[in-house]
Image (cartoon, rainbow over all chains, first blue to last red; front, side, top):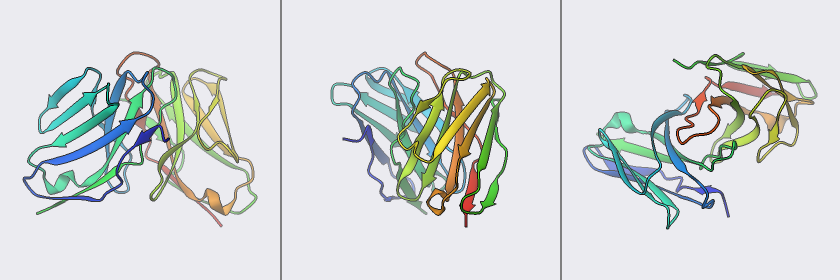
Length: 110
Length: 114
């Protein structure tokens, strides 16, 4: 079983819709979870992180965490073409190792 | 702002050459990481280090070694470059411990081995 699993996509949504990105992880000791965005040809950059069960909102972005199900998701409301990118999930297991999912490619069409 | 700088943006090397990729961070981070990124395979961890002179293997260490003689610098070494090591290499750094261990990335080095 992979440490972090994401659907590679592409996930295609129309402009203004809600995009839902999902991630499952195998290490139950994971303490916090990070969502990174990577534009084509660029390096990943942090969007948000979450460490408590439930929802965390930041502008148009909402991260959802369910530790019992080992599941974390990212919702993007009012999706814009500028949101088109690859979204990477990374759990913080409390150890130094930092492993990413393969990422989900999101395409937002005008 | 945290700055992670990789020594080269593009690099072309010949098969069998010894290749050094350098990474420097200016935020006194304990953790440093080397990844390679290939289409469809995502970011794969090669090696990481949580302290000077300390190193740990990641998921794909074969064919690579690393060096961390100073806290701010983490070098990736390809002992004898091969064509299957053609890839984008990304360096990252982060704080050690706590809940928010955000990783900051360098701009990447696109290595081509011919």
